[in-house]
Length: 416
Image 1 (cartoon, one colour):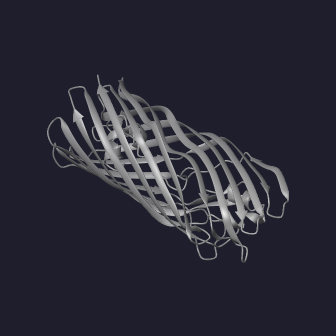
Image 2 (cartoon, rainbow, N blue to C red; image 1 turned 90 degrees about the vertical axis):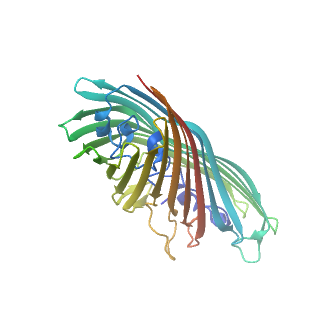
Image 3 (cartoon, rainbow, N blue to C red; image 1 turned 30 degrees about the vertical axis):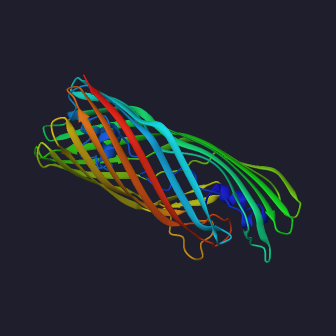
């Protein structure tokens, strides 16, 4: 259960206002693709991973990186656009948009003795929203009463950061192993202000605030098997483990009956939980110019108690497909396809206070130019999602959802 929806249920007057919204995308396991080469190939990188982005996908792959390599990738623009159809009065759509400009990956690898060490920084998920909207002239949940004016001010900043060291080593000519130990940090702040004027002159004001931070670790264990020069198989096992978390939510309102509710604060140290993730990848080097890659990413089902409610997550199996083709020794093209299915349960006709369920598919492409010691890459990614949501607390009403996500990135790398 979404904690803000739970708090929104404190006031009956909220029956015609939004009962809470989702945090940054914790309902999917693939949000922003990491690394230049991997991003261009849709994230199909578990069996490749022989450059710095392998620190994130499969650290065993960097055992084959026998030169020092510095790589930095920048998501020049990341934007999402989500529409909840007929959310207000059954006739008005509600649209949320997020955009951000951020460096989302930095990695460096360096041979050391019989192995390779590395360090990387990744931002796999971020949402920055700042919206001011006014709607009017639609029915409320009160018989014969319309909403003359509904004003919403919404601001949200929610980002997840991971950084830490890696190490990889050959076992023999065909096998290698590796480990990455990420420090996990998430920071969330959300403010939502709503003001409603009804056709009979009554008014309602609601203000809600949510702040949350969490700290933890994510170990990633990887294996790489190369039975021939043209075939590679990669396997990783990982799980994020939260060591501490603090969440504070606050609700204040003046209802349509004229009753004022002073700020009601809810605080919890409950920790989110994450599933065990298994990634299996296959890469086939058809020639010196053509590479084909595919990943299967499975996240187990699990549930846990949080903020007085039960959080339930479904098992999710996603795929990623990628291709890389060198036009010449200095120019390379990449393309990819991936899925990002929701880990939340389907919203049935009798469901109440369910989290949104939106499934995504995505397409990616990039072009790279190589010189003797450096490269420059430009790429694009576009995702399309559809599903359902429940924006209103304590009701079985459902809204159809359409969502899009666009990412444009510029990356540079340097070998020395």
